[in-house]
Image 1: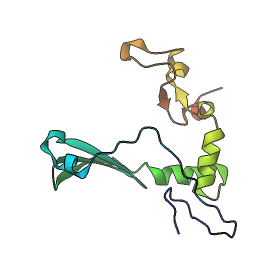
Image 2 (image 1 turned 135 degrees about the vertical axis):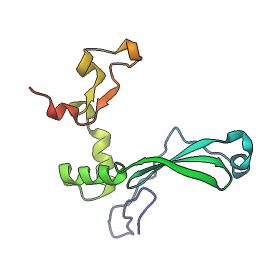
Image 3 (image 1 turned 45 degrees about the vertical axis):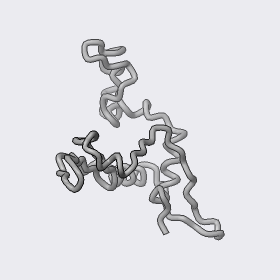
Length: 136
């Protein structure tokens, strides 16, 4: 079956098993608090194969206000195309040891440092894969 990270899990047969990961920026809100009027309106961002942004105005009152076809499906497709990895876990493992600054264009690559007028630090991402189209 598919594990909590979308990775095909395995039994004792040596197949890939998802590792449990901890994410430091989790937000948990009780159902009672969600149903109170003090939180409305709020946005819910759901990242799956694509991305949906919902505005929630109250219990049972929500509207999809935005979204993108660029999401987890795009990431997984690019990983398979560029690295030939066979599992989602393998893609995550490669991402942990890789250096995105080798291919991603940062603010410093454009301005030679930060861009103070917009309060952008030098290490702010400007364009994913942007260095791949720069002239050498």
